[in-house]
Length: 196
Image (cartoon, rainbow, N blue to C red):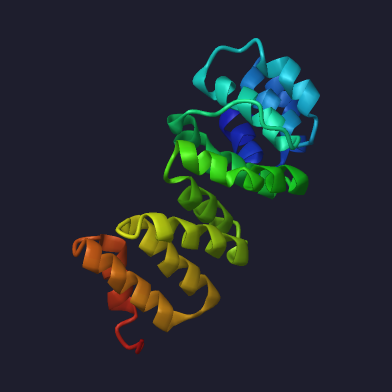
């Protein structure tokens, strides 16, 4: 196994296939994530606390949250850079309690980074939690209606559910905000025969 393959296992929520590789080769951050994805938060804390990196700082803030505690605020950029990725890894690793604890503090994250609802929504949507994704996408829409990417997430949501008319309408809403937004232009063209 090489590093790239090990990271793919990690990102797909399969820490059992890469934990030994990361531990034996000194990749401490990745090893800590393997421990997180198996619910071994205290062990992960022991590995992550001595590390000095932006990602390690995020994980130090994330660990208590995953256990149902809130101790410190992540930064705007930590949320922007890591929230969706880590949410996806936790979902894929079937860390249901950790995911629920993370979702519970969405309002706190939104107070730090006004794209948090959208990030939660997109992460849930990409992992086929459609009902939950819609809740966060709606919250985001109520705050930032003119976000073209957000409208396109609604397009993807409706496409996933097979609601082509609604998908086309959501894509058309994207084009009202930004007439040159390519994904929406492409979708409207593909759905040209669908009536809304």
